[in-house]
Image (cartoon, rainbow, N blue to C red; front, side):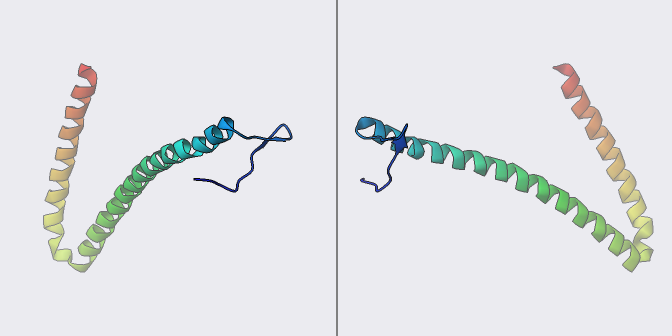
Length: 100
C-alpha cells in the first residue's frame, strides 16, 4: 500500500527496504499501544466504578435512614452483621497472604 509520507534521516530521504521497515514499525507499534491503553482504561474505570458504587451505597443508606427513621433498628443490626463479615473476611485474606 503506497503512502505519500516522506521519511528523512540525516538530511537524506530514506528509500528502499529500510523505508518499508520504518513504515511497518507503526503497524506493529500501534496495536500494542492500543492494547496497553485499553488495559489501563479497564483498570481505571473499574476502580472508579467501585468508588462510585461505594459512595452510592453510602448515600442511599443515609437517605433511607433519614427518610424512614423507623427502619433504624433494622439498619443497626445489619451494620453489625456487615462489620462481622468484613472482619472474618479480613482474617481469611490475612491467612492466605501469610501462608505464602
